[in-house]
Length: 354
View 1 (cartoon, rainbow, N blue to C red):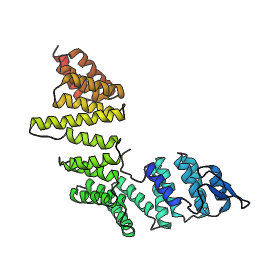
View 2 (tube, rainbow, N blue to C red; view 1 turned 90 degrees about the vertical axis):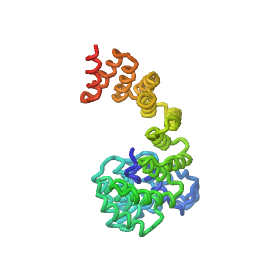
View 3 (spheres, helix red, strand yellow; view 1 turned 45 degrees about the vertical axis):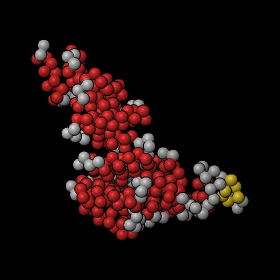
View 4 (cartoon, rainbow, N blue to C red; view 1 turned 60 degrees about the vertical axis):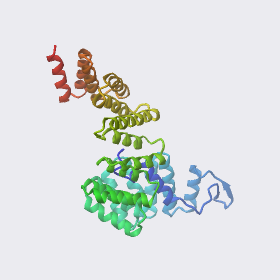
C-alpha cells in the first residue's frame, strides 16, 4: 500500500489505539474478579476484557480497549462491534469515532469513514488523531487547502507531531512547492529521528534532482530498518537513474544498483521488480543481452503476467539474433496486454525481417 494515508495503515492505527486506549490503572497480570478477590488473568484474553466491562459497563473505555484487542488480532468486525458499544455508552467519545473511522478505512468503506471522522471532530474538535486522519482523507481527495487547515490546527495543539509535518510535505510536493516540501519532511525527522517514512520522502525528493543527499537519507532509513525492501529499492533506483558523463562513474553507480537489487531478492525472493530492473540495466545501459534475458526470465517466473518483462526479454533475444523466440515473447506480451503498442511494433518488425 502506498503510504498516502499515513494513519490509515493498520500498524499505525493499532499503535495509536494501544497508546491512547490502554487502561494503565489495571495491572497487566492481576485483576479483581466480581467477588473482589485478586485473580490471575491473561491481559491478552477475552476474560480480561470481559471482566473489565463487567466492572465498568457504563464507560466507553473497556469496550474501546477490547476493540483494540480485537483489531490487534485482525478481527475487524468484532472490533467494530465493540466500538459501537463504546459509542452506545458515550455517543460523544471521540476516540471511538476516530478508531471506527480507521477500521472502516481498512475495510475500504471510505464514505462511512469520512462521516465518522466528521462526527469525531464535531464531538472532539481537539482530538489530534482524528484531525490527522481527516486531513489525510482530504489529501487523498486532493483537497489540499482543507487538509492544511486541519493539519495546522493539530500543530497548534501539539507542535511535535512528525506525521503532521510529513503530510504537509506531501501536500507541498504534490503541488510543486519542492522547497517547502523538503523543509517539512526535514522537520518530520527532526521531531522524530526514528521516523522511517520521513527519510524515505527526503531520499525520493532529492533523487528527483540527482542530489547525492538522497543516498544519505536512504542509508538512514536502512539503518532504521535493515531489511526494508522499500529503502533499498528507492536507493537502487537512484543509482540506476543517475546519469553521469564519466562512463566509469556510471558503471560504478549501476553496479551499486545491481547489488541492492540482489540484496532485495535475498530478502524477498519473489520480488519481480528487483529482477526486472536488473534485466533493464543489462539491456538498456550495459548491452549485456544474455544477462538481460536471464533477469527478465526471472521476473516472469515470479510474476507470470508481467507483460513488460516479456516485451523486454523479446528485445534482448532479438538483439542476440534470436528472432523466433523473441517473437514468442512479443506475442505473450500482447496476449497479456492487447493494446501494448511497443510490443505490436516489435512484432511487426520481426515479421517484416523474415
